[in-house]
Image (cartoon, rainbow, N blue to C red; front, side, top):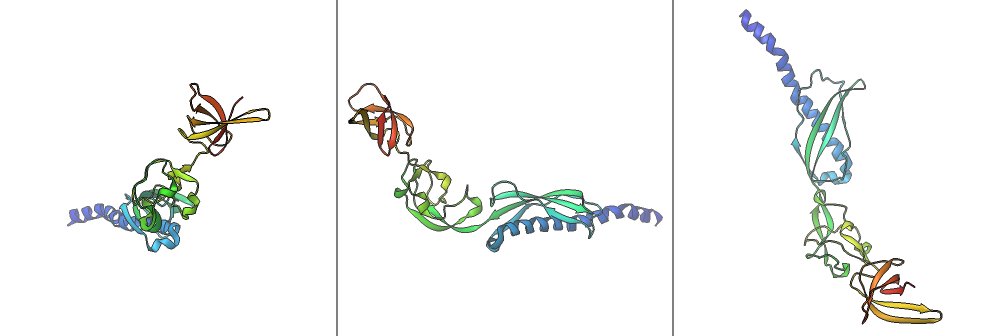
Length: 233
């Protein structure tokens, strides 16, 4: 009996610690989840937030005086998978740290591509549609108003159903590579104009190389407006 009592007393601190771990872990997860829900704001009700990694213990001597402070998520947010660091603080002193992993789905209405698009497709050639997508899975922010895409073109290929992002676009240059241009040359009051082909893209003020129609040697010209360049003297 004495031996059994001694063994029980020896194991008792471990039992207390083991019982403490789940409650402390739950408090850490609750603090981490609350910080994410607060950041999601009004969209938190539609979000699906799943814990993918619970914090490991044990944490000894945790009590009602312990405060659990979640650290803001660093980087793009919302995103599909991320971790939240939580500091365990008592009397102003950090007595422990833990990390909680999450997976997030955030349904949202957004503009998407109605069909596949290719590099340098003009925005007018794209069929945009409104659909429900997962905002957490998007590479970057959604385009709110398609009118903001006026004068732009795709700078990379896109897939049907992919959310429309400003990062997918670039400005259409005033003179594009291999584009037919009007080449002007001024000699005093005399202005001559001929056809040519730009050998590189450029915007107003840029110097580009132009191959004059029927000529053999390319010339340098300054872009002065869309589709027009002036010979560099």
